Length: 384
Image 1 (spheres, rainbow, N blue to C red):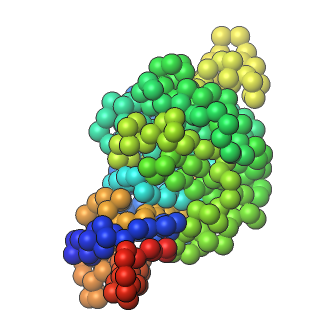
Image 2 (cartoon, rainbow, N blue to C red):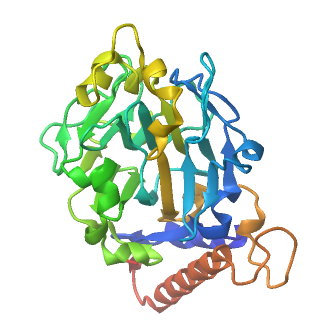
């Protein structure tokens, strides 16, 4: 999206009333370019006290590879399941943070074929505020589950004042309404997905699924669709949320105003082991065998690689949609160019996904210009 095009959109929108504005494709991570626009954490888990090291890219790219494309063209993000870890050392894993940032007016779509599960395993797909000390600026947990729990848990984490409203319409079950990280003992305002296909072996057996998260001034909404239930609209370049039905988790602005409690977010994909949730004895033993004697989550599971054959994400894609391109801050990258030449870098093709996205926005702008120009009287009412 060029700067001139953004200015044109802003000028047009200022004089036109939008109704049911669609979310239009801005960026997609998939195939050969999936890993291009992420930062690898490159340190031990000093955030949730997990017994892992989140490696840098140079380590993840060599055997045993922890990030790679499989034969299906999907991105794999995994825990090392081949190395015997000496006592008092940590197992290697991955944490990715997007270089692109999302603001209000965006739709984030995770399409996964497999998610990490197993005793001691803690995987998550989520967003967090850029540059703020948690929970300032907010956090949105889209997929998060530990050990062998039966379903996915969604949540918001904020400072004091945000909660989930009573009497909302959602398919999930609310466990905690207070989103204040301090007031909820760190849990946030949590909603359990009713679908057994939202996590673990059932998720994989069903062919995976798709999570859709709306981050808007009107609130935060999360939908989960098992593979056979994925709406056709999610395969297009423009999504109307009316086609998605009732959200799995709903957090309306009436009781938690995103403009007040959330800042610009970055996307995170990570897997840790044990730590402050999966490794808590009562939590671990609620779905996994009881620990023997003085053994801990670490000594029972982390040292043996055979415990981690299912501890991986297999991602078909991650997509960013927006009501206006300015809602997404794209990092400078060769994958974002729409050059017709064969320039340097991995994304020089004139038929790149980014180029197609740029051209699709040009089509929308052209449509808007035509509508505005043809309006004989009053303000144009646009719906796209």
